[in-house]
Length: 394
Image: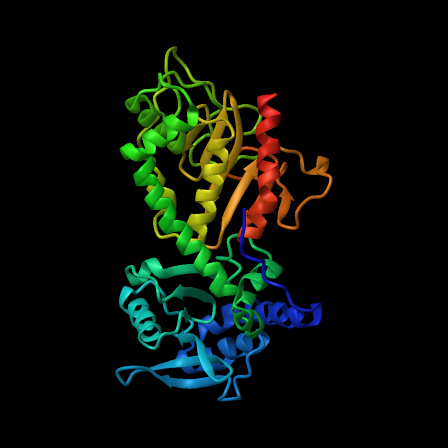
């Protein structure tokens, strides 16, 4: 599924330095917030140590230039350089500052774009937002991914997982072009996916003719092919949909809640509720998270084209076949939480990002939870999603 190599994580002692730096920040975070650290102490106490743990020498102006001048006479707090060429700009804000101000985002993205620098970061030391400045879209939509060091806002990621996300910004990975390759794939996939949505939902005559020729069936009519393409591409269910388990909206699922879904009353075709839609789950999410979700969505719908029931619930998107919900997906700012109808104890080799939630409350259906934050983890998850589907389809 992936054409981009995963980051090569550093030797344990190097990663340990980053992990210890994150742990140190977490321990002291509440105390620093009580002092309402301004920008300069935030940079000195939080940002500089993290950059050093990522392999950047903040004392070497040939590697880290402070107050880097940009086009228009403005300056950015840090310019991180490879061979004395800036490859990543970092704009720091005070510890308590929010990072959602569109003006601040547009400013740092413009600084990078005007200087031909593909990557820039907006951070308050705790939250890190990574933008690909060279994309042709509004500044907020250039958000590639974000990660938080705050344990209350780290979305359940371990310190190790948080460190691995930050490691993409390391000197080693920037020199290898890992972030460039990942960004190129992620944004290109998003553009192509949108184009295919338009093509498949309203297929041009040339495509209809190509499908008819490939099928070798002269009885196929263009209108029927067009309707079929739209159904297959969108995963539309039949007119009479199969009954499916239902998750109680607004309540995490623990052992008692998972005994069985609430039974649907009445007879006849089930009508989907209109109170939740996809935008509820995708609004404001970084580009990488959206592409991870789209990939899982396409995989789930392809397992039985036209027969998969996709539902938008309060906290997750569920996929079911018949009465069997085999996958639930919760979109977060830093990745996905995926729940599958599998037993953790029965896995021959569980991924490092998997955990047993049979006795832990959670939003989706199933005992296995996957914390998916990268394409490589999605590749590892795909066989498990298929296995969960097969278990219910058998």
